[in-house]
Length: 89
Image (tube, rainbow, N blue to C red; front, side):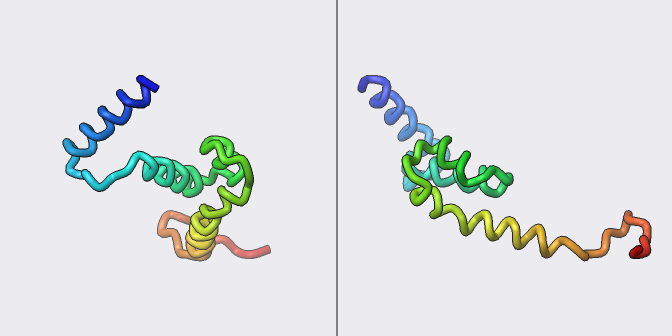
C-alpha cells in the first residue's frame, strides 16, 4: 500500500507541473489502450495488457480499431507522387 501512496503523490506532482491538474491516473489506461489499438495491436492483446478479465471490457476500444481500418482504407487509391504508374494485369 505504501508504494501506491508514493505513486499517487508523484503522479499528482507531475500532473500539476505539466499543467494538467484534471488528469486522472485512470486516463493513462485509456490513452495506452488507444495508442495500442491505433498501432495495430489486436483487442485480445490490449485486454491482456490492461488486465481485463473479459473481452467485453476491451470491446469499448473496438471503435478505435474501426477508425484505424477506415483510415487505412481511405489511403488506398490515393495517388502517390513517387509511385510509378502500373498497369493492372
